Image (cartoon, rainbow, N blue to C red; front, side, top):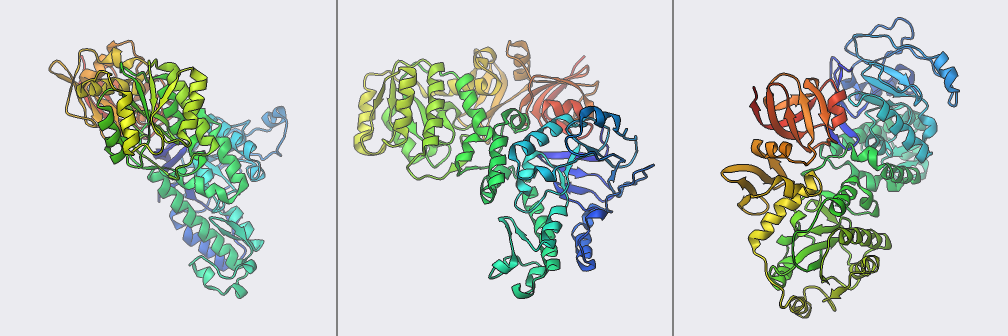
Length: 599
């Protein structure tokens, strides 16, 4: 149970939180300790100045700890060497006292558990720097073992170049220890790495220490600069987390260090850890400018849902077309030309790197309308392989009588040919040079000659069911929405059954928001619900974590959820994952949209 730490926003495992001391500290935060003081009094004063919003220095009393709400007290503990046998560690384990002031417990992976503190200090982390797999495994093991609403503190590891990765991993608190040590060694730190000032012609930083000429720049100046650079990087990363853009930043940042690149790729292999913490939807642009972007949770999740949940309801040929720079694709000039040639005689699916394939019904759904990528006209071997695999999985789930590939010869066509070989479905190719030339568009129109047209209204009905499948589970569209009508137009569809409105398409996310009537249909259907059980009260606006009794289903941030208790029934959007809801003692768990009192 934590009383002095609260998470406010989430960007995957990274969080914006608050260490609730007498003077609250926004996290991720840079904090200081008495035993990590720079070597000179002048610089020591600087550290205190930079960290003045962190309250008093950390206390490390080892017997009968006393504390107050102005600082976070590290509770008494025994530090044992790495590799100590488990039975020895248990024999020398310290029982953490129950205190009523902000506190932190020092733990190892073997002792990581709920010790009732507000923060946890992971021991032995400096030795993991440079060992990507070991670092990733240890952080994940500890983060999974401690309560989700507590802060994780890694001491002696943070530098300006690795700070983004630490926060991405789920670290909330760091200190300037490593930056200070590097400075005493004469190493000058930036967000791009480290160097010796003597190897530089000029110093790029505008801080007071760097105003010294390079020829006079000494180690005290180096320490001062390093701490300032780390403090600046903390602020940069914190803002990236607030905007949901940390991953974009990190993909560029890790290129400066092979260990960071390896660690990011190791994290990308930990899909379960990241997916449980990644929001379902965002209203921010997602940059996809590196091949690492294809490993992002949002992209892997989209590809998985398209190939396992989505089902085409069109009795029409498959028309594969290239994506467009403009999002959603249907608003682009090229897609307007494609649609003029197709005239509702085929089911349009866009091929794109890094998303894979995007059925036209899902082109407004995150991340399909939110990403931007570098367009060169050429795909790498890895991009071709990814798109071909997603397309093959899509074709295995959906049965088409015909497939027309109206795609450029390079990249797209190779992906199509691989999917042909994998599925046995023959493709007709209608592009000889470029998809938007008169010759290619005429070939596309001719290939559909004789195919019946479907009504635009049918597309809107099928869009509702397709989004429902994607959002709630395979075949959910048929189970939840039978006998419905669609009012208004994409991307703001209004779904009604008789005189009752049951759902609305949220334009900025491309998903459905249920009304109370829609929520009741969800509960009464055979589609598994994501339910938040609350205590005996009627929520107004939001449900806080302490009011939650239990949850049912795999709940992610941004999920549509049912809220129900002895006195209330409602529907809203999750602001926490299911685990956080049941284990947290602070914070908004659900933003409630509609609620009614029950008998």
